[in-house]
Image (tube, rainbow, N blue to C red; front, side):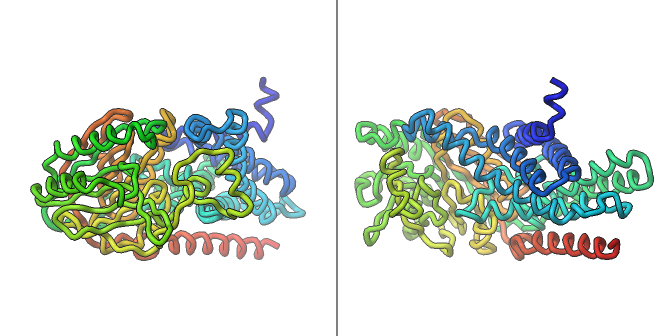
Length: 506
């Protein structure tokens, strides 16, 4: 057993798997720091770029095989894919995402392995503190861009909401927090290597200063309240995914949301993503009149998730009824294979033959859609997976005073997916200095404060109405102004300094 555990690739895999416990629902935020320190140690011992790449791949497979295993539930249980094929597809998806840590390992090795690996005192510390954290962060950022992006399990998310490092989110965003996590891992490894020598004490001092600074940053109020608090109700219908689009269950679904909506006296009522599994034009007029009249009596508006059709295109939409003029938001960032078919002429058979996903080929609503003027607030709506992309969310700011996410994570059953998803919204609250309202079908329905902490939450997989007082905010965080440019600038500076030090040593 000891021989097996001594294998570097197994160590990398286990480190990646253990890092998952730093994320929701576990919240052991120091674990990703330790896991990255293990990876950096293995990279620093790699003799060839190919070896470093395989170590990065092994780490990524541990991280993603454990962290996104819920993909299997969506493919097999609700997509009706054969279990063997679903397992292979889940493993392939993990491998695709693990390719980015592999690329990071290869690049790190190319930059750090020299013909004289023992020359230059202090060079390993430079690589641990500058090169490796910078390249790791670039790889995470690229993972959020390539093939429409999948930034899930970026290590910065693990620090929300409890870690002191969450204080860097309003400045640098999630990838900036990832950078600080990676630098902390490098400092931890320098401390381990140097122990109580001069450099070990310096590493300990810098590590403590980094975390204390993060805690102090959390005390800054980046945005300011505007207007009076607003009473909101978020509806959780708890409609089973395998019943959601059954025609026989349609009346029951409509009745559930009518009953829940009419039980609320809130000024803003929010239904989940596609709560009404119909085209908007097919929602009965009397039903919409009932909902509209009710919220007008409350002096406010209701946001309804449904599909819309225009010029032959189908959209995943949220539209409003009530005291304000009816408006809509249409989902912009679509999920490949779930909401649109990339390279349809080549890959269309995949969705048509192997998966059974309703409305699996939709159109994008456009990147720049204005906030909805409802219930006296300017509400920036995002749908489901869109809240994974911080630089897209800030397009509606600083105009928006509230963020609303509507989603349906019933696709993933009792897995960690829903609570991990809620953690993404917690990061968006910190980045933007706005409260986030999440209305979901089966959970996690929650109200998130500007500090990223959950103010109120419904139990998962239960029908319910979450009613709370919320506050609109105005102003901009540093991240709202600069987006990911701050993080990219820091990464560029770190690589530049590492390159300069390297040149002086040669």
